[in-house]
Length: 253
Picture (cartoon, rainbow, N blue to C red):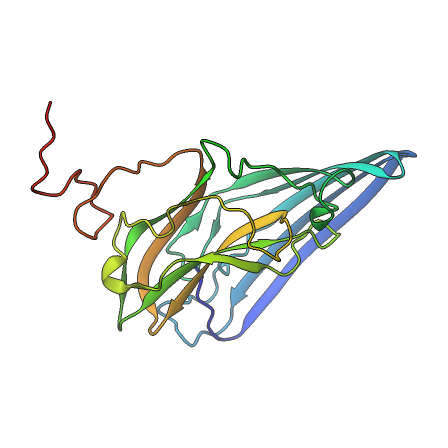
């Protein structure tokens, strides 16, 4: 989850190197390297947004590589790689995101035109079992007021350059009250749905988190697309406590 504030002045310094090579008529290769030093020089919230340290959401470096093979003009196979180190999620340096290497494969023919250029994927919508969303509060939320949190599943087609076009809202959770946002609470238990009527088949999916009413001072959410969830019964209305059946129900051995 992210919150955006005007926090002060910043300096960005870096180096970017990009290159390409076409060893064959139907094969193109490219690669790039970026290193970035980004830090606040002044802060309106010095206890939360630190000066002189790497800005949140900005990795120190990133490596990219790609290949395109076009055996015939109407058909192209693509592969892209992006690798980056662990980086801070916030400029206060309280949450560290894991390092990752991402590989994306695509094809530009024989797929839905809404995903053209990136490779649409059948992720088993409607299958049994179907892929499922798991959105889990991993750190209890706190707030100086009565903050709420809503989660929205969004999708986007490829913009033709391997990046998402504008995202469309698919389905949203209720606006959860602060008292519900405790560790273990699950916020969007649903099977991976078809796109709503009138919305194109996507290449990209994401979750959008909306904080309203008041600012949160702590809290964390982790999200996955999974093949199965632990969906046993829970007590009362608090689904973070999976205590089995409520009192008064007897199950014979």
